[in-house]
Picture 1 (cartoon, rainbow, N blue to C red):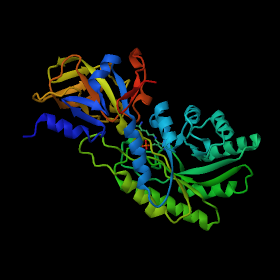
Picture 2 (picture 1 turned 135 degrees about the vertical axis):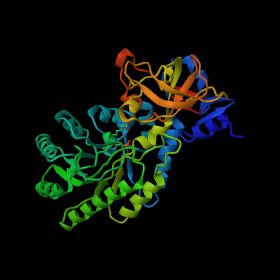
Picture 3 (picture 1 turned 120 degrees about the horizontal axis):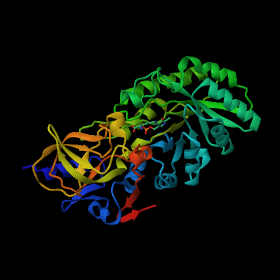
Picture 4 (picture 1 turned 90 degrees about the vertical axis):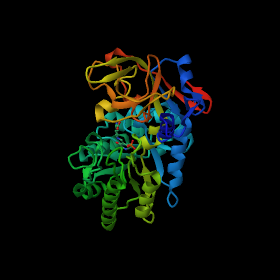
Length: 414
Ligand code: LLP
């Protein structure tokens, strides 16, 4: 007979392979999560460093014909532990602010492996990027390019540019994280690209070396990538026919991860195969900018039950993590699975798991079957390694919470 215990054991591994039940207690790597509360307070973010390392190696190994530059999208999680681990593994960075650029450099990522994206780079940020001699700026508008050209001239600094193309492709993800449709604020439409290459072809300081693209995040199927990549490939061919030298192609990030047990998400192999099929013989330096797919699965949010509350229509489990710690459910209707740290084999009942914040949006999961939980029992909210801690706030004057890293039987708390 399949018991609730078996179901939990089977499910939890799908979110992070270093999560497992041993003697009915949940472990992350070799650390029993029940013991975390002896040393730290909840809520607390806990990450498996091995999971991040494995995700990076798996992505890297999935490429067999080309060796792209992997520039981690720092916005997904900018913790020093993550940046330094990825830097030591040879990863570069995709940054969108001076803060991210500085932090990446401080963690050992060499400027020649850093690309700078974003629609609103300020004058100060552009100057800083030029001073640091980063690999390239991914430019999102004609106006931005003009300003970079002026700054480069005034400061007598050379700069490499990729023009971000808006391919008008629907990535079929949540509308708030779709970035490649013509109505989105990102990139420059195909029809205006050639003009820019013409305008700057003889510029002394500014060199347009290629194109970039990023159509959205948490993309679950291969098709939108395929459509967008084919469009950009065509654009490269047209530019080359006109005599422009295109040496770099930055394909952005966007690979989705599993948030629910039955999610069917493309894996990195499929994604890499597509890139190799389209671009292997094109004499292009390929860059990719994965964020979520490298770190998303690594993190859990450990939280304690404050109390249960039985309502007229519903029963609630109120936990000490709230939407200020993890805003994704409130902001994108995202579902993050919740598991008990101490596994019992009691009958399931359905609860809404909610936080303590004074907003009705402060709900993690509605109608979630759960074992009977009591005050002070611990639960984990899964898949919070990306866009979790970095998007948190102190709303309701709840202070920032700790982030700890686990590697085998060690806890790194800095
Ligand atoms: N490159 C660029 C230019 C981006 O804008 C992004 C993400 C990435 C790379 C990395 O995408 P990823 O591989 O992580 O999908 N806060 C939202 C996600 C926002 C993504 C913004 N851009 C969420 O929690 O779902």
